[in-house]
Figure 1 (cartoon, rainbow over the protein chains, first blue to last red):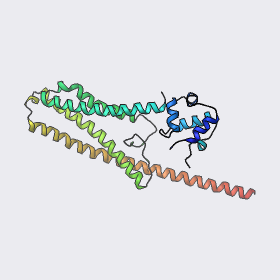
Figure 2: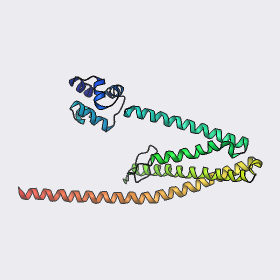
Figure 3: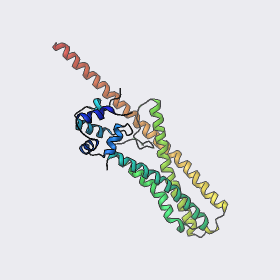
Figure 4: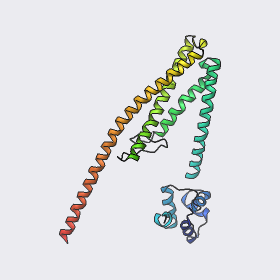
Length: 64
Length: 188
């Protein structure tokens, strides 16, 4: 399932996929695959993305 | 290299290792039967016995796991429900298979080495080979039963202890909560 919340949060922070990838220490492809729902990140990576975007785990990764 | 790339590479390498292992096993058995000399397949023998040992060592190098691990390398749960029990049984089976197969193959290799040393390997016919393989299978089954029984009794006893510890901890937390609630009521 696509992670639109993460994409919106990234755009709110005016970050490209490459920019966010550099902040959290992964490749651009990994960010792209997380946003398209094709890769499940570890909790450690989820927390790093939340910290970079100023959001909580619930905000970005909770499925409703 | 990020976590996704590492997982991809690890997954690909595991698949390649399985394929290479099967190929080396087939080549080793073919060489042994054709040449009747253990020296001709020494490398294959070392590879076939050494790889499972190394894999076992790397998987079990995590010190925080006290139970046998599942095939996927995850710690099994000590809970009393049927799903957790089935998971533990599968872990005991996997553990026993690993130990018994490595030791049986090792004993088989030693028997072949002894036959080679005393010159009787060259006279091995189909019957002798079938005897050797049959003995190896019997040893495997006996070792499997022994390791399974040991794992079952040892780890089920430990699972029971872990469950009892959890229950005691829950009871302590409940009574502590009650005390705090009573204290709040009294203060208000």
